[in-house]
Image (cartoon, rainbow, N blue to C red; front, side):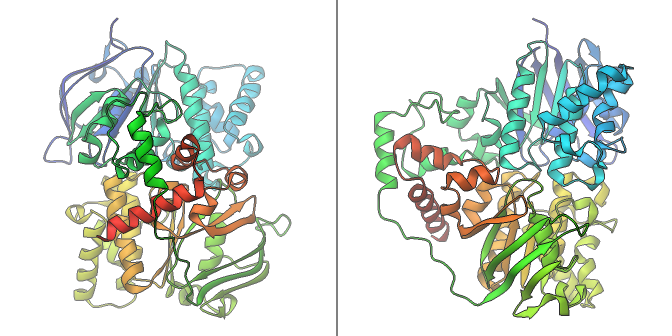
Length: 568
């Protein structure tokens, strides 16, 4: 069989870079294969896919060496239009992909380009919108949607493309866990057409492996460092060496002293057959004594008292919300896209004010404070970094808020350097903001707010688009702020790993209502809450069920062990 994609001694160097981003790439991908391209930020995986879809060299100029053929056509001799007839792409940054004035128009764009009759187009648009849960939003303006909703529209739009190769660049980054599972299933359904080749670029290995993939291409330093089956990769040490997060159940097996050799179907927890020795070790580990998680007894710093809010003064987005957050707590605010999480954060920051009820910040009514006064206490990192960035150079962006507050040049330089190093951005401090990836822009906005050392730090989807190494650097710094300075941290997140590893409690929203405010281990072990909030059971929950153990105890034991190990 002839490969549908073939790299031969391929290299690429961006016009603005002094060294190549891709080096000595030799790779053949065959029709019908479903391939996961894995790697840390800056490893070259997005650049690799941009070479396939024609964005390189036609949108991003640079120097190509070697050859790349797609569907038998050498890319540097083809036009981007010709390549678009064979390759469809769902970009990580959904805003960069929208062309329609409504959701329906955007989904219909590819159909219009092939002059599909309206009588055929309209039912197909409605069908594709329904598949991703966006049928009720067909008349909405795309740029007014949440990040997750935008991602759904982008996925729906690519369904209409009758192309041989589909590329999904971080397709799960902005989706709630349940919709992420749906997206993975949809991609898997598309892959069942053996005339279609699927390439997935994604950091969230465990979530992608919800459905099988044929191969995993691991990249590092612009080179291909591994081309393996998922089982082979999980058994190797390559994930840790290249800053990729392994599935939680694999981590649990290692904590219990299990060997990964001899287990069948390691990449699928449902199909995994433990060796008798490993099953015994796991049960012994999870039934041993551990230190229960303590609840904070500090004074409340944030109080929502019967709070409701409506954007149009007709339908409530939030209804009768009541909860407290104590000083120094780390809280996960979770729920499906559109549940009300970001609205609650905007209320806390004073960007909008309650329609009913009262919000108290450090005991005072938030209505009595200006946005500037609230901003001295609360810092908010938005989900979309493009909505926050205003300076041209990275170090200037990070130091901007400090400069506005009249800090000395010495203080600005010292704090900027500190947070840039913590967020793994120091080497890029003099780079133009426009030259970095979406995930790196996210880190810049996090660094900008960290520099203010606020009393309350709100992070909206801080891990979206981040590899595990960058995620770990950011979380280490955030947790240092929490531990050493008592800063209260709120994570608005779909990342259940983040909730397990870095928070004590979870506040859960569903359709504008508060459905839980409890310990993380209790929330993630409650099937009714998980289903109502469109979350998904973590692999720790599924591991507990597989072993016949209590899920809440297993999750709490895992958290306790991991945090004890981190302190040693």
